[in-house]
Length: 128
Image (cartoon, rainbow, N blue to C red; front, side, top):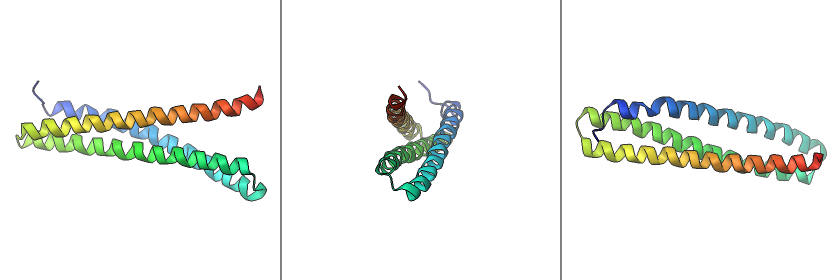
């Protein structure tokens, strides 16, 4: 298969939308941590402290998701440059790495969603 400029360019909208979703998750969790921190200062509840620690873990995963997605985006741009200067072998290699980075980012996203879902199910058990 011939790698053309349009193939890595196809990743741009996908990575951009992914980054928007990751950023929305980050902002929601950051706001929740701020609320829980305020509550913790008022009550010094150990359960709130535990929740903040778990949310901090999710923030770490989201930070890594974002970093790997940005790396994927950057590698797609480098691929386009390598195609432009006619270095096909290196363009193919960098593009494969870009796709692998995108896959890692999506796998981290799946892990973060699983953690989030597990935390919500624990909260819902208290209501049942």
